Image 1 (cartoon, rainbow, N blue to C red):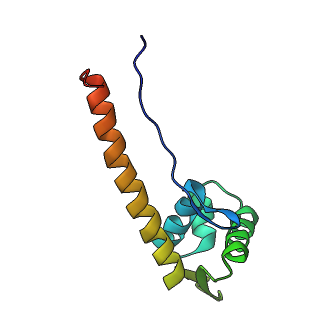
Image 2: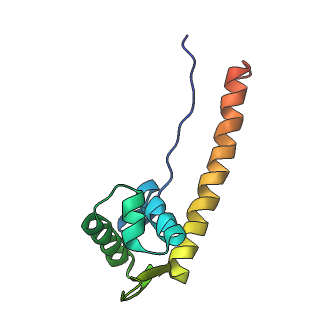
Length: 115
């Protein structure tokens, strides 16, 4: 028999369906690190318009603002995550880390022949 491994993906959903997965989490985390949507899009090799539409789609599905923006000027604009966005990242991170630990234990048991 070939080696078997367990894989997983985590996403958050509501009664209306999927809300936030790996791509959305990556965008939010990069906005948080970069301090701007424009820089986050650049780091992720997204067009600014794609990142902006993606963010607006997330906000529309959730019914809350995820990013606070400050208009540009001589030094450019800035963006920071709202409390709602930080809470979603916290929930996603907890779920992802918890599932990862369980999957690692299962894969170890399979590799050692215990399963």
